[in-house]
Image 1: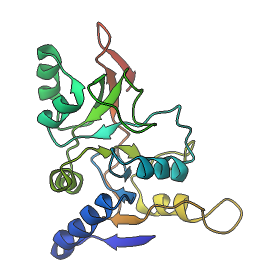
Image 2 (image 1 turned 30 degrees about the vertical axis):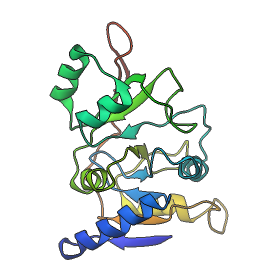
Image 3 (image 1 turned 135 degrees about the vertical axis):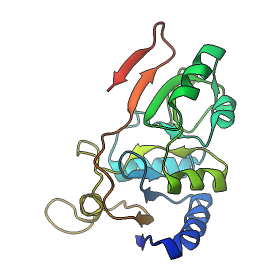
Image 4 (image 1 turned 120 degrees about the vertical axis):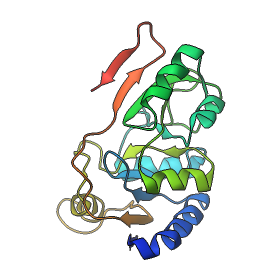
Length: 203
């Protein structure tokens, strides 16, 4: 597990390393506009499997994905004019929406043929990664399943490096992008747009 501390002078270099790592199927811890997240190529089956192993999360609990813009969202999900108008009013931002998918993703990403969770984040590093990779990325919080997500880098590192008792966790992220502590925040609000009226699943 490699930890890269971000400074203004090395941001470009770190982004290049991160993009290369994502394209190689690796899993990254990355800051977002909410909490630290586990990021990988959402179309890469092996990378997705590793995310679930790192989080110790059952695949029955699907994870959402980050997209770079509305155009990418419309390639992945069915979005009507009413939904698009709403999304333009809340994206980029801390709103994840549940939509009907247009394509199949690896197991664990949404529910096949039924729903997919999408979000356009609002944080420089993750937005640049989305643009540079030009592919959807996982948007799940960087924590062991059952443990709280965090904005504090030391808490994130502790979860993934030390097993309860002693020793290291068997499955760890490949790369951690460390920007220090983020502003206090909760995970994104989740709204199901497949129902009428739309339903808030998580505030």
